[in-house]
Image (tube, rainbow, N blue to C red; front, side, top):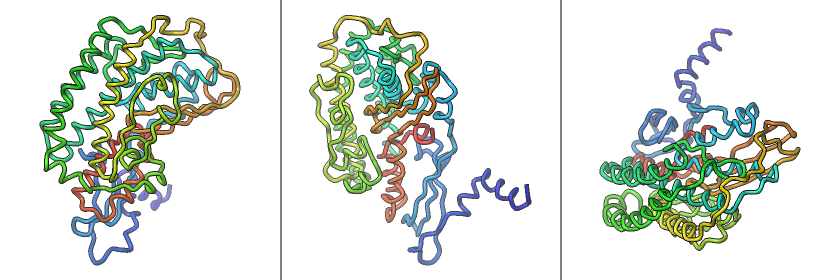
Length: 392
């Protein structure tokens, strides 16, 4: 290694490399300040780094820098058997782990021709929607903390704790779930699970009006969100945004409706959308989605069939035939996609993960231009980023 190579490597390790190679905005007039948000910064919700160029308090340019938590999930998928890879899914997006569980097992089931009992499909819907609410509650509390309000996160975590208690009954976990299996789920739901879930549906419905009065209608919150980070439909589509970020811009795209999977076509629920595409619309969409998830859970419990929770004919070691498959589900942050290429062996030949947060993050660079730094924090929080999913 030459001295110059050594210097470059030291700069990369220290983080100076990205700052030194950051191209200043041609719009800059006079002195500007290059500032690092992260990788250890509360507003980034993980080890994300955003290099911003400021003219006073106004952002001329923003550049997300990934790589601080990369764990090679896709490569790990090539060296583990199909079953051994299951726990990885709970660690991609740890806040909606069951959606990633579902996307992976459903992709393998589609490739291998594995049938899923009807009761197991209902259980997947109920548990995945509970996990979606849990994810939205954590986002709600953390977003308000970003904006300077401390009390709401205490309410959010108290309500989220009830969901974690429920899911722990059948999954044995409280965060990084590994509950779904090829052909069903690892354990049947219990009478206690059903009773506690029904009780939670009523409880959460009663809580949401308090959320609205306490937070949503608060003039300080609205001042930080209304007309902030207005994302047009065109820009959202151009970046491949999905989930509440896309729906907040008025595009009624939800994988559960547009590309129906499992038994979602049996349930009556709406797709909440925004009108202006600002941070407030993205906030409102997620709160409305909690209501819709409660509706889905209530309908699923009311029509829950008897039967097997796991297909007894699924072999202990899955060996799908040669071929390729893609399967997508709707996660709390948007469309989750799993692409698998099989060579007929016990391990995937190639596995590709489509993380919704990756596309949602990269529109921030354009969306934040011209805003003040404080508003950029609001915009970043409104995207609901989970960095381990993006930097997988």
